[in-house]
Length: 58
Image 1 (cartoon, rainbow, N blue to C red):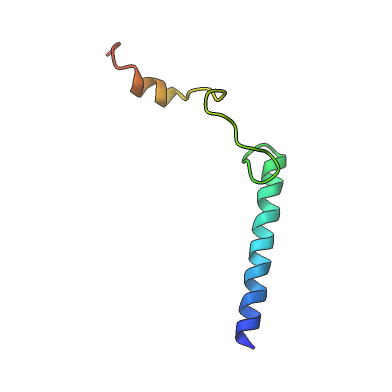
Image 2: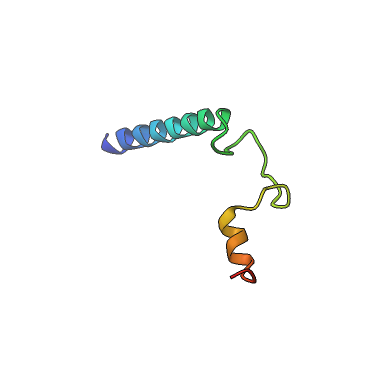
């Protein structure tokens, strides 16, 4: 009986995490299931990336 309770609890936690991530995706915070991956060439470079790659101005 304890195994059944543990499996039901695990399923509930996974379902809740999935719903939370879908909600965050609707708000634009993460890409979870409904949106595909973005190509890296379309993404803007971060300030840290540009600082680390361009060391000539130091």
